[in-house]
Image 1 (cartoon, rainbow over the protein chains, first blue to last red):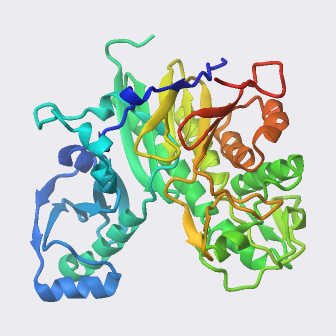
Image 2: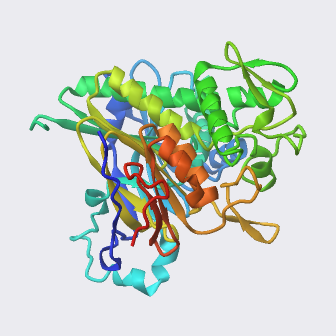
Image 3: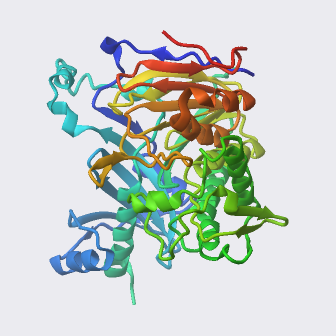
Length: 175
Length: 303
């Protein structure tokens, strides 16, 4: 079948372009069932002591921004961790499943949000937010589902996973 | 036809240095789940085989040892190399996977420990029987311009093999739509990537877009980008974007690099692969459109 490759240029007035491109893929419950199907998980949040933070930063070479880490213990061994990374253009919530031996089982992006904070200073950009309240959020995700053109690199998640593996060694591993 | 019982699942994992999103629809949740896992497994495999950064990948093993000895690679790596060499031949080296030394010297790839021969090109890469690869000179290959598209094609094959009837796989902007559906694909604004410049409707087709977007940086006082013309060694600095639609995502991916480098002169190779192309200038205005279904090899000027 031949596709129509007609390019529909958008007039400036309807540029599909609020400051964010956001998708929610999975909530916590769905992410747990995706990475550990059929397992039961119990919450085991961790609050890091200053010395632990430092140890994680030294081992991973990545800064620890928060003391609290959302962790669940998996029945039969393993861990489920929810984490966030913030980059210049992105804010991403993701889940990491660890096997009982601390190796990575699976990574799933839960929330992906591209933001362009730097450009909001531009007047045209600010005008787009006029009249938008939390009750009428910009729903880009409804209209724009697929984007062609380089997305951001996943370097921040790679760093985040490195940090979580050091977190495992410091705060979760026993014996 | 879509039924009311149709469910859609949409997942995203960090792979291939970017975000890979798969959205599929069907009526059986368990089989969709199996399909999506098989598709991600295929992409992970391409990642493991073709990563420039992983010392155990086929790409690293070739770069280390294919000069002066044969290196045996996985049939998937072989297939990508074969396609890359075909494009190199057809474009007389505009598309060249042996340009990684230039990317490394401009800071896009880690500098290799060994010293590649500056005269080395794709002509020094030899693909021999039984998936053996030999380099005639010390050189560095990077499959970054084509492996992402190949990974999308493998994922679609895995989904189809699992019985998934319709969906879309999008690896950092290189995507493919399959099944009895059509999808509206928005193309980023070349100069303002947070904006969509427009949209294209696709079905049973792949599309890739290359732009400088987030990748442009300064090198020796000039802007450079990872898009390099293999013939001239010059990299693209203009804030334009190139989109190509073709049957296979690997082909679309490679063709964007060629159109980027030679623009309208790519009409011949686009026609041979029955591919369509679109160039957007920095104000998002289309400056060249090539439609493979048209008879004119010079393409059609869009207004």
